[in-house]
Image (cartoon, rainbow over all chains, first blue to last red; front, side, top):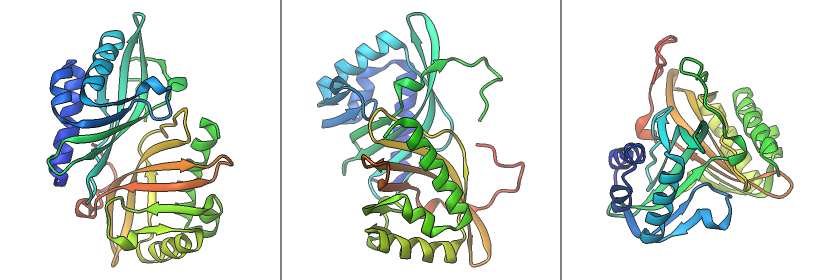
Length: 136
Length: 136
């Protein structure tokens, strides 16, 4: 598992979220994948195992149509973990909203994702800013 | 431990790194603090306990004069963990270099830092970009 492979997988993950391609996302994960989305969320947001993750993501994609935009590079490490920042646009009951997210992923020897921890806070979801008003 | 307190502590941590104030940094940490800086680094970069962290940071500050610049907001959670992205400028043997970092912190009930995990890769340290050339 080298740094470039981790970076490619994480960038591809965001592309697949944007495309709503749950099957391709789950394909990148190990059988015993653990997803916390968000970290510190209610018990139902900590999901273990590929089929449970498939159902969790499929429901979330249908409900909220998540659209991530990277806001900086993937931070790789010399280990098997990496982190990346992005802005996530969601559509909640027809209303476009957004929230800042950092995903931390851990990989197995073969390069599959074994842990995904998404740092965001439902209390910090805000109305989507107009284009050109994105700040930072 | 609420989200705003985590955010304030993490923002203050970056200010204290910039100021080189090791004592004030260690004061924000629990006795059994665990620091991985970087994640996946050599054994000597995983340091446990306040006095060990004090020595580790003091040596690093003297050697590399780290100067962090936030590149996005702190991502809090409803739990006791949060993450933030920044750009770190270092001075290595007189040469200004930089690397992208994401710090993940975990807090105890009293709001002290119990774990700091810094995601960056020594292999990705690069010469510092000129001002005005900082774009992603």
